[in-house]
Image 1 (cartoon, rainbow, N blue to C red):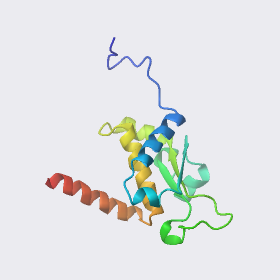
Image 2: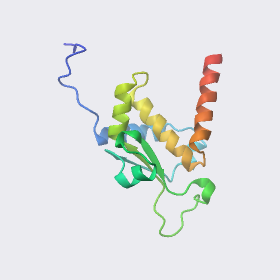
Image 3: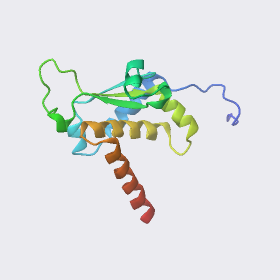
Length: 146
């Protein structure tokens, strides 16, 4: 029996474990040379970013931040970890991503998780937010031209 659009019984919000599986699939699907360059980056999923992190970005709502790269990027001499250095980590924030997904039905949840993960890995590779926005705009323009 198919569910109607208004019958939400039997549906559930994806769990932290579900998000970890989506992130693992996204990491496994990275093309070379990015996969090798990101091999030392771990991925962690949490409900929301911590208040101190949000405050550091001047954000008032935990729904404003979907992901964060923490560590030393490759362009900052992070290719070889120093003794005592914490691992480079991408954090994905489940509730913020779910909120974005609920408001934007153009993409699947997996596509959004992949996008956030790749965006945060971009920081590992030394790209700024502005660099990544320009790359995405150029890619979208190229898609529209074909």
